[in-house]
Image (cartoon, one colour):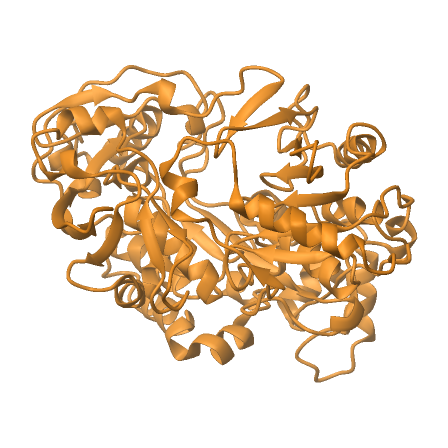
Length: 570
């Protein structure tokens, strides 16, 4: 555990931007010093708290089952929209979609029946959103304010036992304002769901270790001890991966199976997204495209939901194929557009090489982000004594002057392999980000900005500020440094026959991103990429069933004007 944080490269950044509140070491020392007297629950939740308060999206721990088998939801979803108040201290937040039909049917005789899309969130348990977020900041996390806001909005709807403590109260009190100005209150219930396969494996192990049988009466488990209203439930084995598991919904009076039709489904080459705008699928799962108003604004949109670059055919990462797919789009269906927008608002992490490769299609001679690591015994074992020659990091470690805390800045991507694609599109382009844009997504946005390739548009003031190379404990850290890192206990017992994993997991950000171009030398962590233009959706985008988008309209017009300026050099 201590070795894990000794490889953590962002400690000083967290102290600078978040203070001692983000320091995990006191909590870790307390756990280590009292390991013999603490219960398993105290150890697990203590470790979770220590890592969450670091506000580092790349350095975290997830809990094991049975606790992690459960999550709760209020069934009410929210979204930020454009409003008169300050984006940070007084954001405008509205209900973004109808209450899930399953939940609505269960609670139709409560204030849930009053909730409508577009109703504005006024307060949470008597606090403004900003006050509520700050009260729970050590549980919510977030490197930048924009990132923390996005995480808080999710936390308001969902709380997953893998990542956060399950609630100690049965409900939260929401004050909402209807579109005609009527203020009303809703006791938003925390309704439990659980993964059957997770429960099956972890409760079996629990019984083997303690001799105590955990039955499926959810009120009897630590995981849902707050849900005193929970009834017993029956579920069926789903025989699917954890992301598709059948869940049981537990409410005060009814139990029903989740409505699978409510989930997004890939049903063909044409997919519906957001405002009923049609996006066309590609051979890469995370990549789709469309042309926005081809007869007028004619803006090509490439949407990336992540930088995983997963082949639709093989379900494996295929980076060269992904870059060539983008190149094909730019040379064919998007060739005659007036501009290109790469929409990465949902884009989290993924492949740095995928992000870098796409940008080479717009500009040549780009220098990739550099990285730095800590200089200590653990990183020596990771990078210098590694079983695979990590040449760049090894050389940087060895060339760093004695007594230095950090290594010299060095390349993560070999420069010889970097500029391997030629530019194919020289008209205006932009990227569209949000506070969810992290890691590889920030490499794309940061490079576009630093090399004046295009404009960084954002729904938030900045991106997530989560800039680091991440390795998981198993397999990467154990593979690269088997001296300091060992497998989690009960890995075998908490891995299903379909390779679902229910044991504790850890990841660490071990090499920090350093920006390039005209921002050369600047970090990404806790700062993010500042938006050149901030544009949030309008209320009309949310409440009307429309194929129009003021956001896309604004961006398309902005890029048309950019096209009237002197052409950029590629």
